Image (cartoon, rainbow, N blue to C red; front, side):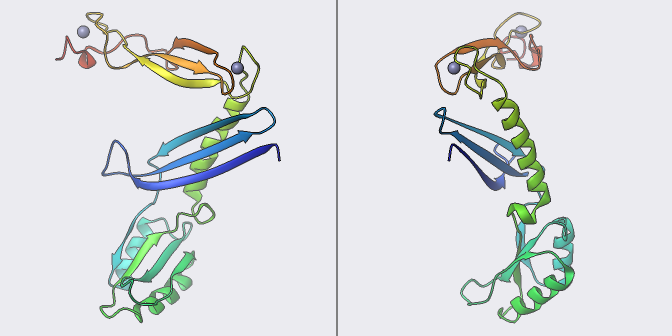
Length: 210
Ligand SMILES: [Zn+2]
Ligand SMILES: [Zn+2]
């Protein structure tokens, strides 16, 4: 096997905006023939990720609607983990939801049940879309060859801060230059930002806006 491609997703609070849920996808590519690894990740706020306790059929339906059911699957189980109650996964129809709801309730003394989004990709078209976007980025990256050794996977490996202020020229904390590198050899090239921004707003300047 010359090539390996692996996918992994994790869900939780956004790293910068903790009140937002997010989906972080990672694609890992290994080329055994050429001897290099490349992994790319993508954080997307586009996710239905949520979980909670509901104590009525109406509350469950409201949760389901907010979680983009039935195109997106749900997982149901009795809230009390101490029971040996079953876990229902990959629920994608109202009938299956009702069956799971009634079965789960029969295991709960207080009648409340636990519901969460099923984040396995085959039950989550939104996650598939995010993985698709990342796969396109990976494919684009593998089409770019290192100028020195011609290994696929040439692309951004780092960045330097210091974008100058438009008003006073002082270096700011914003990215000034991006660094492209090879996945196999040590060759690197420093270039301007991908978005071609060459000056910072005085608002981001430590002199103009201390
Ligand atoms: Zn300034
Ligand atoms: Zn190279």
